[in-house]
Length: 324
Image (cartoon, rainbow, N blue to C red; front, side, top):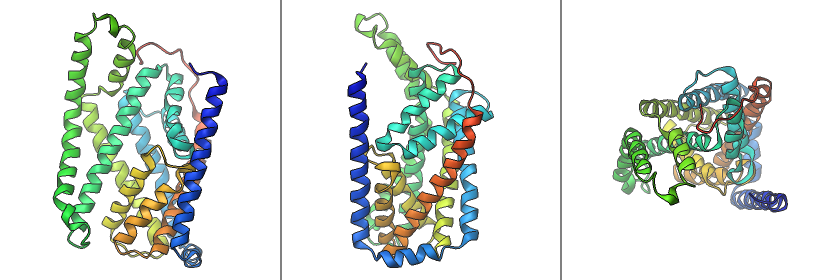
C-alpha cells in the first residue's frame, strides 16, 4: 500500500501531465485552424439539433447502465444505473484514465469486492473496444472507395470488423479455459497470493452467454453515441455522410481510452476527430468546432445526470470475497 504522501504526489503528477497534454494538443490544433471561422460555426449552431442531441445522452447512459447490469447479473435498478452514470462521468473528467477506479469503489456499495469489480470493468471496457473496432472497420471499408488514403486499408478493415465479432463470440471460451488453467495450478505454493485476484477478475469477466448480449448492447450504445455526434455536426451545418461521423467517432473514442487523454479528456479527442474529419474532406474549422461542441454538450448533460445519480446511490453493503 502506498504512503499518503506518495499517493498525493502521484495524483498531482497525473494532473500536471493531463493539463500539459490538453493545453499542448489544443494549442497545436488552434494554430492550424482559423479560430474566428470556428467561432462563427459555434455561434450559428442550431438549437433544435443541439436539444435533440442532448436528449440522446440519457439514452446512452441508460444503455451503459444496462451493460453494467448484464455483467453484475442484477436488474437495471435505479441505484445500479446511478453507479454506472457516476462511474462513466468520473472516467470522462478525471485525468489520465484514473476515473476508472471509481467503479470498484462504487460497486462496494453492492457488496462486490475489488477483484471481482476489476473483472467487471475489464469485461465492460473490453467489449467497448470490440464494438469500436467493429464500427471502425465498417466505416473504413465503406469510405475506402471514396477516400484514396483509406482505399488500401479496406481488406484490413473488413477483417477487423469480422475479427471483433469473432472475438466477442470466442472470449467466453477463452475465459473458461483460463479458469481451468488457474485451477490446475491451485496446489502450487506460488499460486497462494495470486489465486484470489485471478479468480476474482476471471469471475468478473466470466459471463458466457451474457458476454454475447453485452456485445450486442455495446454495439447499440455506440450506434446511439455516433448519432449524438452526427446531430452535433448537423447543428453546426455539416453535411457529412453518417459513415464519416462513425469513422471520426471511432478515432475519437480510441483517443479517449488511451491513458494520455488529458484533462476532462479534452485535447486528444479533438485532435483525433479533427484529423480524421479533414482526411474525409470536412473543413478543419468545422471539424474542430464539432469536436468541441459535442464534447462540451456531452459533459454538461452527463454531469447533470451524475448530480441526479448522487441521490439514487445505494447504501453500502458488506463486501464479500468473491462478489455477488
